[in-house]
Image (cartoon, rainbow, N blue to C red; front, side, top):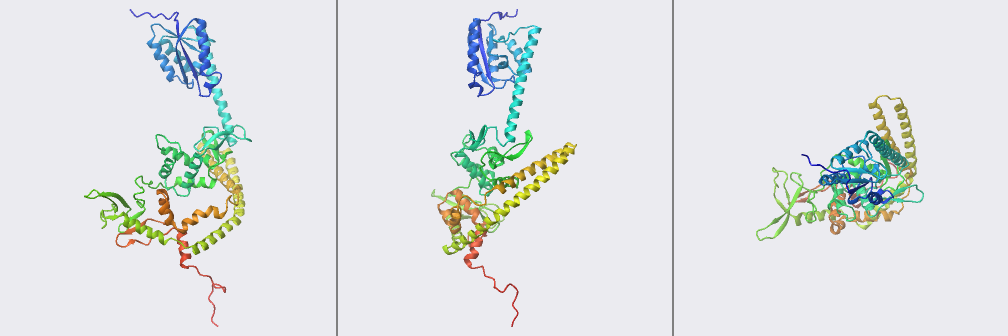
Length: 523
């Protein structure tokens, strides 16, 4: 015979309380208030509350951790039976299918559902009313979701970001703005700004280098001590940092945001352009202070990049070497070059780039002249950007007219994509047109460090850290340096600024004759 289970009048009860979000748990219908009301009901009915199950999860799904634990508990105590008390039917589920799925599971586990406001019975009339109530809970959930989405979409259209703040920002109430506005969150904001500007200027050649930069910043949040590559990609692609907001899945193209950008529109566009370039080899993780020239110097014989390693002699002493290890047919294959030899030769090449004070004074005067000319061009550039923005707007209007008449979904998608690209271009042009002609700081303040570097890159090499040394390699020379143990470095190709300074230093510039460039006829 099957064991008879007495569920007619159980005296023990469990409470199930649920909220959809952490915010609701702090309000009047939170978990604590639900539990209090359920305990009051249990006391009125003479039940002894033996367990309480709480969770923060949407009621549209049936697979919930606390609900699963409740069902398991009911199965373990099925012989005695338990009353399951809920504060309201919408706390049990907010979906008709999920409601009846859980009702059947609860009944099979030996539980009896009760509520202070609803009487659950096993007849056609009660099931009908219960279905109507469950449907009402589902309707309320869906209408709340639609209203929330509409409000958030309206905020987006007005240039506000209604979702969770990204790295470098936080939401804050700001005077003159309705609702909360994204504001800079230091020190993360400055770290993200440096990463974006560094990638745009090629200080960081790849996303891997951006990742290592972020991992080297104590103030930047990490996951188990590192920064996932996806975080780097998201930061580089996020238009919020450029002062824009967009959400294509909601049909909202890129538009100017109300928040303060971390970088200007031109820098953001350079970052996007670089992301579309062909990926380059990542910054090697094995480049360290021991071998700063690794990967930047190549073999003069075969052109392959020199690698480096430590070697231990028979006496146990360690020696540092660079060596060619790429082409087996190379005559220098696997032949070592002492680190002291190659790095001393490199210091000699940097010394050749050192510029005297007189030449730097001439260069500084030249840069100031160009600086002044840029100011004169700035007003014309702003007018040009305004005219271009007007032309782009005409193109957008023309495409919108065509879009209204289009019937093919393929054509419609093509028009929409083109319009989105033009809108982005228009925003960039308007931002450039609105950019102040004069910078906030003076020439001497902005270019002081740059002039010091141009005067003597050797100083940065000798006193800088590994990142500064790698920066010297990129900014001082246009390509890899070829090294031969017998003859040293082949004539390296200096970067453009040092090439121009070299011409000034060597007197490679001559004044034109006042009579013109045509040859003068003999008398």
